[in-house]
Length: 248
Ligand SMILES: Nc1ncnc2c1ncn2[C@@H]1O[C@H](COP(=O)(O)OP(=O)(O)OP(=O)(O)O)[C@@H](O)[C@H]1O
Image 1 (cartoon, rainbow, N blue to C red):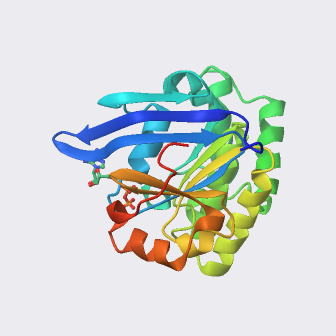
Image 2 (cartoon, rainbow, N blue to C red):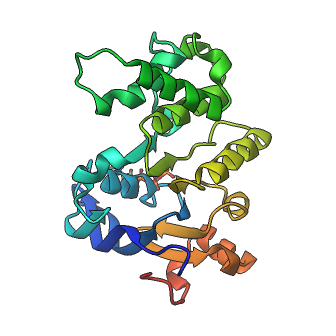
């Protein structure tokens, strides 16, 4: 525990439903400062919904969510979010640089121009994600992998303390996936990270802990994950796993 002294996210018995459909039930979870957490689970298991609760875009029906010791809305400026690739309209008629500068918007009024400092930070983010050479290119002329890196750069430009990523490698091949997770590992030296992934075998090489969501939540320290656990997570039998780490 010493490595992660304080909790930056605390879910206390959180339940959430869309209309009458229960999506999350009785979720208790603490994410520690500096942690790299992987979120896995079957389609529709509630992973994106959990991220929306962290960002304060939706509120729990019961239970509470605290982020950096306050409400998710008040903490939102400390978070960087990378949406699922498919959900980003890639035919926006804007350049890579303009896309990344959008990450600076929270620091200014809507009518203010971007400052030299904003541009410097945007370029630094593009360099860090390895796509600076495309700065002037319209974003609809990028490959899926390049666009994904631009969206990560946009999140970094807001200088987040916690980075939330919704399936960041869904549209890239396995070689590119490794490159992107190597980047996350580097970023994790200075920020906490929560990443949704379908590839549990792959992410266990990178994350500190895996949380499996299937309405309910089960967490596993990475070193404790066995092939049996993976089977159970993906066989839909997660309710049958008995272990200690429900609330951490
Ligand atoms: N705005 C909405 N209105 C109604 N139901 C919704 C809405 N958004 C999501 N849902 C439903 O809530 C459930 C959980 O969705 P969520 O997107 O959190 O799952 P997920 O684990 O991220 O899934 P995937 O792996 O497929 O992305 C799904 O059954 C989904 O259909």
